[in-house]
Image 1: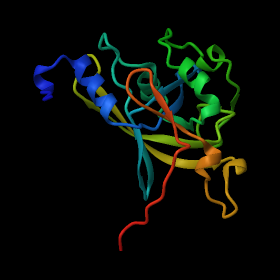
Image 2 (image 1 turned 90 degrees about the horizontal axis):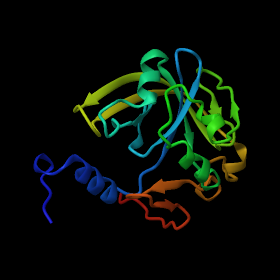
Image 3 (image 1 turned 45 degrees about the vertical axis):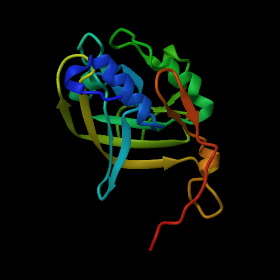
Amino acid sequence: MIIDPEATPVQEVYRHLTACVTPRPIAWVSTISEAGVPNLAPFSFFNAIGANPAAVIFSPVNRRDGSRKDTILNLEKTPEFVLNIVSDSLARQMNATSAELPYETDEFEFADLARSPAARVRPPRVRDAQVHLECVLHQILPIGHGPLAANLVIGRVVLIEVNDRVLDAAGQIDPGKLDTIGRLGGSLYTRTRDRFAMERPR
């Protein structure tokens, strides 16, 4: 099969990309509107990109009607966010916050999620997430326009808080205790419980 993105409907390109770039980590991003209403939404175009300075990226693609998502609208007014790491125990609530709701609807209330205040930014945290990355906006980089176009968000991490319950004896994050999930294509997800190790060549 050969796919030419320039000659293929954008929804089909999206479907193929999300089916082959797997598993994708999930950025569960809390932002706040200018009026102070929190928003919470998951994005699977997400990764860490550097440590000096600590930085992350995620991309809320435009809706299928071409409009931008609430996360982008909020970041333009309040350029801070919390990236809450999604463990398997929070999968159901994370999925609930992917619903398309009217702007300035509180997804914490919608998904029956407890919140807690962040230490250095204004948006709240998901209280029961085991890791929180508090971030300030570095840049929003639009890529394309119209339906499913990217809005690449680059954030600088100003605080990392890890629940001691997910640490091992050496003080490192234990992937088994953190128990994250990943996104596959369509409505499929994966758990990260099947792991293997390989030493890097010297």
